[in-house]
Length: 244
Image 1 (cartoon, rainbow, N blue to C red):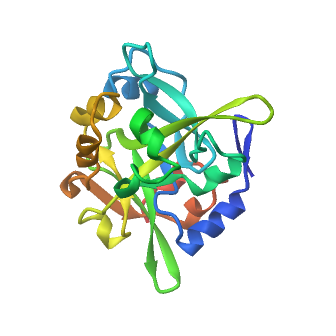
Image 2 (tube, rainbow, N blue to C red; image 1 turned 180 degrees about the vertical axis):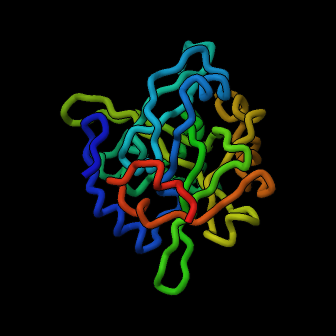
């Protein structure tokens, strides 16, 4: 089992989901030093972050967001797998690690967060599984320059029955670009730095937000095969991103 901030996730169950091909963006990495993350997202301060090579759902992920009354965005750790504020059980978050860009304004689970609680999820690479018959080959995707970047995301605050407050998030997905289409029929919605502020600002109208959620330019990205080591969330080492 994988544990993050007291939240326990049955890793073997997530592996079953991967095998069934139900989800899209289900693993990613963040090994960039905190100072570089701070500079990239223009944050006034940063937090301690250990290098991660195989981040899985229900674990804590680095999220950039604007909070009411704050002049600048800040970096926080949120649970991956959005739990709507009206949910009765936090397990619903296991099914909400991704949100389709095309229906954000329609789905009850994401509609309010799309209007009021948008965020960026920091990463420097993500995994997809390419189907070849019954086999599934893990592929690591990242920027050609190796830089950190931001997934478009949504976040929520949920009051647990035990009185604690759980902050959670989801990664927005969109149609694939030319590179990803050879691997999967969806990809994370990646925003270029010049669009970060537009995405985070409360005042941005929905129709402009939707225009941001498009396939990222494929010429800036690259992908290569990695070992099946990444299939298990228990493995979180540089070997996960090593080319084979």
